[in-house]
Amino acid sequence: MQKINFIKMHGLGNDFVIIDKRLKDIKITENLINKLSDRKSGAGCDQLITIDSINKSNIEASIKIYNPNGDSAEACGNGTRCVAKLLFAETKKREINILSDAGILKAVDNSDGTISVNLGKLSTNWKKIPLSKDIDTLNVPIEIKNFSKGVAVNIGNPHIVFFGKSIEKVSLENIGPEIENNKLFPNKTNVEIVEIINDKKIKIRVWERGAGLTLACGSGACASVYAGQIKNLLSDNVEVQLERGSLFINIKNHEAIMRGPAEISFHGN
Image 1 (spheres, rainbow, N blue to C red):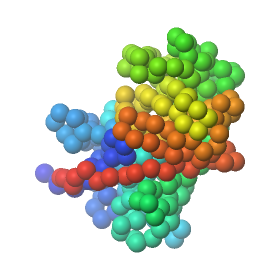
Image 2: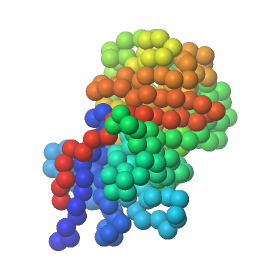
Image 3: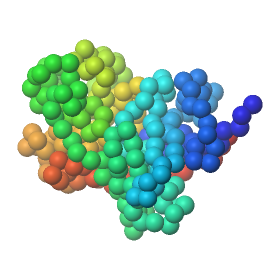
Image 4: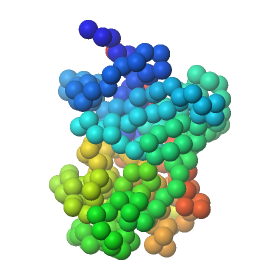
C-alpha cells in the first residue's frame, strides 16, 4: 500500500488536506479525495489541495484544488493562504507567486503573522461567471425571502451574493444546494448571504459549491465585498466576520486582496 503524507490546515475553520507532490508523484483519484475528505473515516476537509512543482523562476509552486465530491475548484483564498504559509516557512521569502487554475496568485507574509493573497480580478460579466444566458448580473432573479436579488460575481470561481438581515436565521443548508445547482449556473455556484453592519464591516454565511456549509470562504468574502461595493453599499476596505474570526478585504481596480490567518492543525499519513 502506498504511503501518502499530508498536512491538515485551516483558515478560520475552513479546512484543507494538503498533499505535497513535488517530491513524490501521487495519483489523485476521486476515491482518494472521497476517503481523505470524509470527516468520520478520513482526515476530514472542505477541500483537498495538492502542491506541484513548476519550472518557472517567478512562481514558487502550483496548486490544484479538489472538492470532497471529486470536482475541481478554480480558486480558494483560505487554501492559498495555507499553502503560502508552508512555502514561506520553506523558502524564508516574504513574497511568493502561486499558480492556480484561476491564474497567478501573489502572497505576502505580513509582519503581524497574517498572510495576504491577491486573488486577482473580479467580474460581473455574465460570460465570465459563467451564466447560461445574458441577464442583469447585479439583479439575478433568484429569491430568498427578505433578501435582495442576487449579485453574480466571478473571482476565478462563480459566486452569487444576497444582502439582507438576520443571516443566522436563514436555512442555508436547504436553499444552498438549490441555488448552487440552479440552471442559470452551468458550472454551479458558491452562495453567500450577507448582513451589512456598516460600510466597513459585514457578516457572511457561505454555501460552498461541492463542499456545503463552510465556516469560512476567502473567495466568498471577496465576492461579497465586491458585490456590496458595486451596489454602493460598502467601502473598498471591509472586515468580513465569519463564524471563527475575520478576514480583511481590500478591493482596488477590480482586484481583491485578502488578509487573514492560516494555521497547521496536524501532520498525518
